Image (cartoon, rainbow, N blue to C red; front, side, top):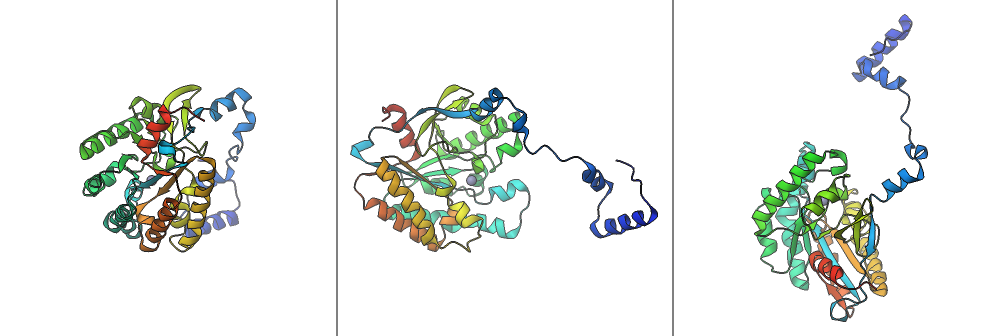
Amino acid sequence: MKKIACSISGVAALLGACLLTGCTSNTTTAQTRPPANPFPGISMGLDELKAKYQHLYVARRLKPKKWPNGARVAVALSFDIDNASTTLARGTPGSEPMSRGQYGAIDGLPRILSVLDKENVPASFFIPAVSAALNPEMIPAIQSKKRHEIGIHGWIHENLTELNDEAKEQELLNKSIDLLTKSMGKKPVGYRAPSWAMSQYTIKQVKEAGFLYDSSLMASDDAYEISLDGQPTGLVELPIERILDDAPYFGAANGSLPAPDLVDKIYRDEFDVAYQEGGLYVLTMHPFYTGHRSRALWLDKLIAYMKSKPGVWFATHEDVAKYVKTTPAG
Ligand SMILES: [Zn+2]
């Protein structure tokens, strides 16, 4: 703590301010601390910048010349069953976020499963292990459909960039694999980082754990093999995007805006261009957002629209990853 040289009136003013705000002399220390450099990158050489830029990069593109059975586009629907795990991880169990998360298990997932049943299409479900443990009926419900895939989505939806602890991250990954393997009866092959936020350790650990693919990165619209610090990993990336995620539209706005049909237009436009390009279309949703009545309704309409086009291959992430890994790129 630093001593403060000031007049009596200054002390009185400071005491008054402290009584109002509950501050301590640490506040003064913070006020006099020089601001952190907001642009550390300007002091780095090109080699250092390149190393950071290419820590995770594209080893090779995996957009196939053609899709199975002559399909023109691959559609990989995914649902992240976070439920209340993010709330529990932060230790701030307010009744609103907790019950909104519970909705994902109680009404959201069953409604999503019935939409997928109606349209007879597969999907991939990424589940934090804690979510699976707190609602153990979810995994059998998904598996009973015989066409969906279940992948890993962290232990308790921990943000790995913020955690930034190699040993703890490895421990949580191992625990997640163990719990989901026991619940599923087989080891998951797909990984999605909670909040799509990786640490510098994540891909190394995911590769060493033997996963087939990751679905947390954004360097392309189409699949690619991830390189780690310049070395090909063998891991397939099935890229995601905030544009194709229900959370920015329905999560941050708490359901107020926009209307589902506006979101539907974005999703359709993205699909239409993927169709023209012969590419991959990955959509990320959450049962506690898209599982609500009005949104499940447009999801049904969206799938029906895609099915109305000739040559659309609906597949799990696992099937897409296996296909692009073994098929010559276009
Ligand atoms: Zn998530």
